[in-house]
Structures are given as C-alpha cells and as structure tokens.
Length: 338
Image 1 (cartoon, rainbow, N blue to C red):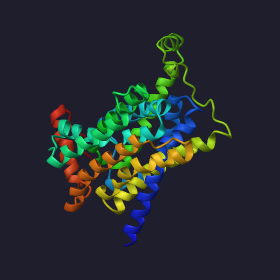
Image 2: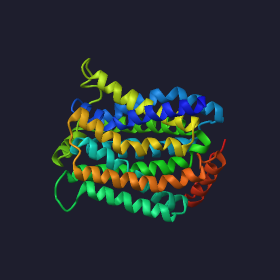
Image 3: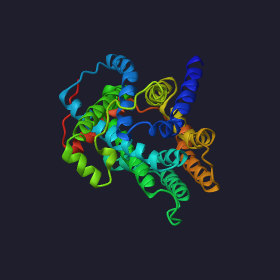
Image 4: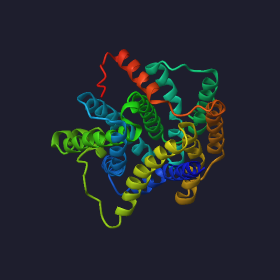
C-alpha cells in the first residue's frame, strides 16, 4: 500500500513537471540561445540524475565498455542534439500547448520503430489507436487551412520521430545498464556533442555560412552568456525540475508501480499542458485544439486499456536482453556483455 501511494505521488509530480515543460521553455527561451538552453538544460538534468544512475549501475553490476561509449554517443546525438534542439525550436515557432500535444504523439512513431527495428508485432487495437491519434494531430495542425507555423509543426514532429527512435534504441540496452543510467549517460554524451557544436559555431567561416542560410541561431552560440540573477531561477527550473526531477520521478514511478501505470504521465500531459499554457501564457484552447486532444486521448486509451486488462508490467531484464541480442543480430554488432 505504501509503495502504491508513493507511486501515485511520483506519477503526479512527474506529470506536473513534464506538463509544464513547454510553458517553462517558452518563458525561458527568450533569455537564451535555443542551442545554449538545450545544452544547459540537459547538463543540469544529467547532474541531477547522476547519483541515481551510479546507484542503479551498482545494483545491476554494470561496467562501462567501449561499445557502450559509442552507443551512448549515438543515443545522446539522437535524443539531445537532434530531438531536443528541434523541440526547442518548435517552442519558439508554435504555441506551447500545440507543441505539447503534438509531441505527446511520439507513441505512434515508437510503434513503427519497434516493428521495423525489433520486429514487435502491430496488433489490431494498435492500428486503430494510431489512426485515431493521427486524426487528432491533423485536427490540431489543420494543414489545409494554411494557418499556424509550418516550421514549428515540422520541428515538433521531427522531434517526436527522433525521440521515438531514441526510445526504441534505448530499449535494447536498458536491460543491461538500467533506464536511469541510460538516460543520464545519453544526457552527458549529448552535452559533450553539443559543446563541440558550440565550439564549431565560433569558427568565422562557419558562422558566416549559417547566417547567410538564415540560421543565425547556430552561429556563434554562447555558452554562459545570459546567465544572471534574473535568469537563474527559470534556468534551474527547466534543468532541475523539468529535466532532472521529471525523469527521476518517472523512473521512481515505474519502480513503485509498473511501466503501464507510469505511462499515465504521458496520457495526462496532452490535457494538463494546454491548461498550464492557458493559465501562464494566456494561450486560448480553441475548439479545434480541444477536439484534437479528445482524439489523441481516445487513441491513447485504445492502446492503453488492453495493457491494463492483461496486467502487463515493465519488460523483464531477460526480455530486454533478448531485444538487445535481436537488434545486434540485425545490425551485425556484437554486444559487450558484463
């Protein structure tokens, strides 16, 4: 009973932090370069996760091997450098509420990548769920109207696709190193790669090229500029609360309950995030947005309810190891088992 109560609180806290992400980034984004903010956010978040990752690694007997370093560099590139930079750009171009709802649809792409890379079957209720969620996305985006930011929509969908790919790739290793360790290592690897990108952005020839292409945000990216007593609170919130504690409480929720129950975080977010955007930013929830949210929630429930009926929990370590071996067999890579 105590564990279930803790699990409920972990889910509530993770939901609040994740649902406030777009609003927090919208408020903070004007104070920092988007690339700079992404770097600082995940560096701080990785530091918050680090003690938990060390503890998890000890419990699992995980030891870092050469192949792991390459894998973490890949997941860091996909998650932090590509997905989260696209996400930050989408927050600049589109309303926070629309970004939050559309990004929550990354489960559609998770299913597709799971089929392509892990050969997980796509069941009938999953197909129905995908169709309903896609219908909700189309209602919100309304591509025929010509309204809204096309750049913002492309960025958030690109972010959702690449984050889904990170999710599936991470699944092939989480049985060996643990979800917290994988996330923390990916954060740090992505930050190292972003640090290199920030350094390259100061090369005069590259800086001029980016500006000539209309990509000035990639030119001469600052590292610490803009960090003042006025901006520190918002930076710490997106780094510690949204990124660090958000993921921490999500993983703790999975430990206290199971993966299916913890996934409620992402089913509640499409409703809660627009409410936060309305309360803090004054972004109106239009009839089209409300209808799209209903479709997305319905599609999520179609996918979620069969899992609850079967009582399916987090995949066991041996199942994840099997996924790892199958993935390596397809890619021709050899696992570095402890």
